[in-house]
Length: 205
Image (cartoon, rainbow, N blue to C red):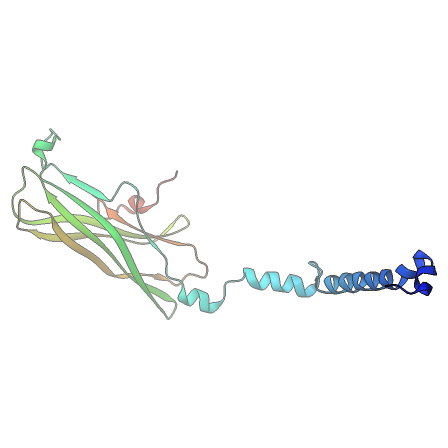
């Protein structure tokens, strides 16, 4: 129970200690939160932002461009010399998928090993034996073609009733080591001429 002296005190005198404590805590909170905020235009903040944008040497060393199967080049359908491209005249259909790669950098050159898995599905006109499919690997930097090679992949398909699996590998994809992460590597079937570098350029959407 409150004493008679406490009861006789005015209300503002009773609340004064409590109000003073709340005010002091509020000031401390404002002071603490304000001290943690750096000026975004300060020299330190600008230097930090610039460092975050810059690609470090270690990141470039670790950079290994991804490999993309170019749109429209993952399937190759062969009807031979027949002008009637119907299922009854199909010799085989080849497809590629599951691309992979590895990279090494030395003396200003990046060397990649590029590989894809594929299969050949025989058609009604298929004859068991060795078939050859054209696979192109191309490296693009902006509008520049840094590497473009058309390979002839031989596949031994002895079973006319089942798909034949194969693996294609180009271990010699080399080009100048990039100073930025702006390299694209494309792979796919290409029935055009071996020197047609334009074939390796990515399609515009």
